[in-house]
Image 1: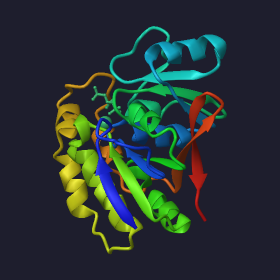
Image 2: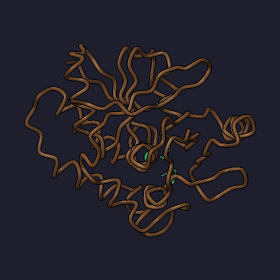
Image 3: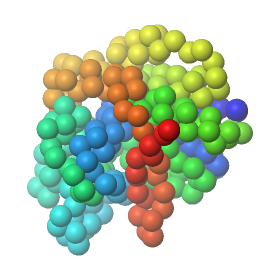
Length: 225
Ligand SMILES: O=C(O)[C@H](CS(=O)(=O)O)OP(=O)(O)O
Ligand SMILES: [Mg+2]
């Protein structure tokens, strides 16, 4: 399996298979939303698009990164989201990096969204599909976010069958700028447990697959045997 790593802006062509990685915090949050019962997550193009969807579907749950804001029901924090019952709900998510990365590869044949919490399930799905090549979209900090790069490299190792030890990858993520800033309370819309929750390896047994449904890009959990 050929593996490539790219920042969002560096994507030169639409890959056939993409794994979009955002450890802190978009795809840790997405996984928690599914664990809390959400049926699907609509990845919104913009804050305005998220609010327009909410206007058309008042029962949908809007979620954005940063501080709480009018029109949004939740923030991009696993620690805060884990106490919200989302059974059967549709979530609309808009964040700075994670959702942007997925929308950048909208045309790919297979789009997975991932963090450490779904690492093995993501790798297993790649192995099952026997893909020839995969592009990992490292969403944070123009492709240089250490937590996203470490997670992408870990999943790549698992997908290609290498006996990858997670310890070093998790250590790199724990020392990343995002982890340090979250732990120091310098990011808004956060819970003290957010970093720890983002570093829970294989917390969930499902991968997350994004597909186009009409004009929307929709993320759903994909259970593995
Ligand atoms: O919510 C997040 O962690 C970030 C935004 S910021 O770095 O906190 O400003 O968004 P994401 O797209 O999940 O990286
Ligand atoms: Mg991030």
